[in-house]
Length: 406
Image 1 (tube, rainbow, N blue to C red):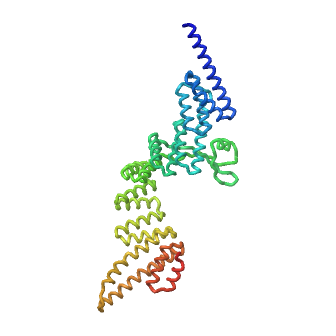
Image 2: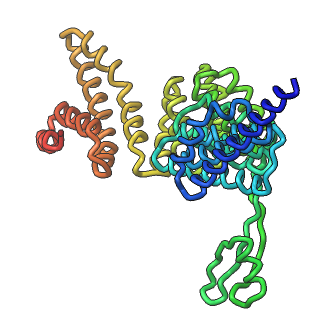
Image 3: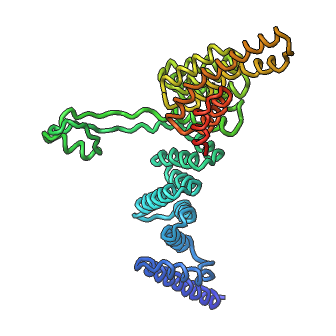
């Protein structure tokens, strides 16, 4: 029995020596830059490590993590490093290795964003966040932004929900100074700021805190629900977001848009007016009020809003087109009455009156459409004006518009 034990002991020593030898060879290959060679050696020696002790297995797992990182298989690298740490592995360079992994992941995500591979970028940034959820919180925020950029709304929503749960603020300190020679204000890094504080090159040196990103996060949750068509959750989220930031114009507009989808025009109009208080020179807000009032049959109010939208933005094509459409709404009733008249003297007299009324509507639209065509070769405007000139008997105007039709 003693002889068997001795043989087994010798066998264990031999295997252990072989394991360490192969691991050392693989490590040397990796350190000299032969990542593929190191990976191949570990793969070919897989059976040898099946009976390895915990320390040896940990060293192998750690090396496999490094190899995976070099191969840009970041998720596998993170899993190996986690397994190494969870098994009690220790290495004086472990913290630096994890920082290196984070940097590699983020740089790769930046490349993905630049190539519009937003899903890949989002997942990599989320992985960087998982490496250290306390220090790398910013990466979770950027992951959500990448997901939104790629219209991956469900993924973005999961990230924003997590940001909301940890109440991410994202507040940073900015450093500014005014160039003593040019008078131009410049933003510095913190290290530059500390240096320039000791010189006379810059004056009015100051620090400034950025605004919290939390209201934006809650707002984006509402916007995503709205984009996904879940009006009920969107409404709940937008009310919560507005409680955080009641003056946010985008939130007001989001809530207003939800009410439009719910056919609650009164609430929509109220919110549009609230939005105008925040941004009184926004032509689109007046245009939206024009649309709602036109739908309600409030032609006079609608016209006022359309005219205001054009006044604020003389290049606002939709404002011109909707104004013309509003003016011409009265034409159908006139034409219907004209077609229903007989040939009596009274009917003929009435026909002449209606014809003149119809032509006055057309003449009212002419300068509006001419102005729009002067701004933009809007084909809808050109064709409408061509038909108006034809009806009015203005052959010159008709031919001019016909020549402009694509």
